[in-house]
Length: 113
Length: 115
Image (cartoon, rainbow over all chains, first blue to last red; front, side):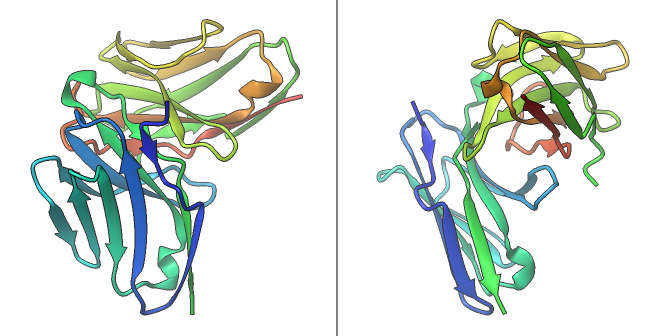
């Protein structure tokens, strides 16, 4: 049962344009949603999160939007930079499940100069 | 550098064998988590330890076991290895038992190849 899904394995964007990465989930009990970024040969690093009681959270060039009715979240990167090229993982968790982060399969973003 | 150290970085072994993966959490972090990433898959939660005690369990196989020692480092033991166990194994750590916003600090991973 894939509770968190990223249906696009890859995305290619021109430098300076907007990158939009999408994520769908099935469990309405999730309390927090997160995005992690992963470069090759490195571990994932936390990027941004959003509580289930909010619909938007912004941090610099990165904005996460949450649509609870559609069980959908998205990560917007504006403007995209070549250094943003990485695999992005969407994840979710519930407070009462300790450290059990549920990850999507990841989307590989390529930002071309 | 996340501050989480995993060894070994790469490991090649044969089916039926047993391996141990080691993780040192960030200084001050009491929680350690193990995740498995198989080819083209997201990270799958295996197990969490907090201050030496098991606190949460995912879909960890019975052939796998873990522990956290008094110095807070953790080991993941994989036995009777099968080809399908080939994967990247990540360790992560956090200060508290509950994750709050969900920010974990991941190591670089141990890549296990079973031949």
